[in-house]
Structure formats: structure tokens, C-alpha cells
View 1 (spheres, rainbow, N blue to C red):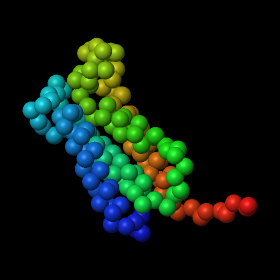
View 2 (cartoon, rainbow, N blue to C red):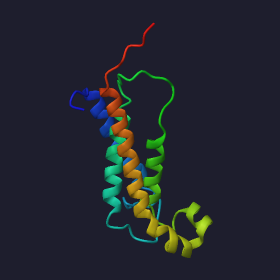
View 3 (cartoon, one colour):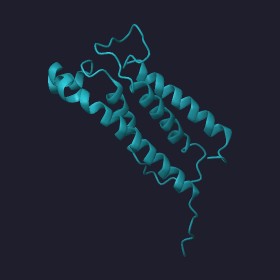
View 4 (cartoon, helix red, strand yellow):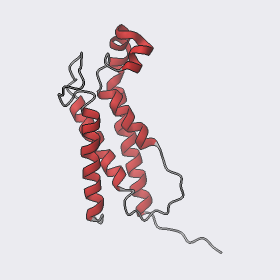
Amino acid sequence: MRTWPLRRWLTGAAVAALVYVLVAIPTVLIPNTFFSREIPPTWWSYTALGISSLLTGLLVATYVASPIPRTGATNKSGVFASLLTFFAVGCPVCNKMVLLALGSSGAITFFEPVQPVLALLSLGLLLWALLRRISQENACTVPVPA
């Protein structure tokens, strides 16, 4: 990462800030008038979102000016992990999908205790995807015999 060009760092910073805002506004980690939250955020929500945003920014930056040849196939774990972050830091009874599936008492009883696990899973997936991309960039290419 020390050899990354400035363009990568700027892209990573912009994406990290964008992801933070795009998740924090609907989950009301940034107070706003568009959305409301019935249950206050947990103590770890801001940290989980901050780390997730940072890892997402770094992961996206690995695709900018990448020396890895494009094959058309990409790993979707980063997208899935960012979506998990949204569910992990969101209000358990404000999420319409959770309410439809579990109801309000089910969301508090079953979904709220799982949210820290979702946050850890999200961070683990993002870290794994980032390390995988960085290790692919740093790997020596083996010439294919003709």
C-alpha cells in the first residue's frame, strides 16, 4: 500500500466518506429529519460503521489503477459485507424487512442480539476481501508456457 498512487488514496478516502454518510443517514447515526430511530444506537455502532467504511474505501481503491489483469469475474464479498454493516448498525425495529419477517417483538428479541455478530462478520469479510486483493497485487506473476 506504500506504493499506491495518490489517485488510489483519494478514491479510498472519498468512498469511505460516502459509505459512512450513505449508511449513517438512514440508520440515523447522523441525526437528520428524513429518518427516525426508535431505539438509540449502540455504543459500538459508530466504531463498526467507521471501520467498515474505511475497509470499503480501501477495498474499492484496490480496483483503481490495479495491476491485476481484469478477467470480468469479481468477488462480491465486499458488497455483501457492506450490506451486512447496514443491518448491523441499523435500528432493529425500524428496518422494514426485519419487521416483516419477525415483527417488532421478534426484532428486539431475536435480531437485536445478532447485530454485533453481523458487524463482526461484515468487518471480517471486508478485511478478507481487502487482504485478498492486496496479496493478488503483490504476488509474482508466473509466465504461462506457450
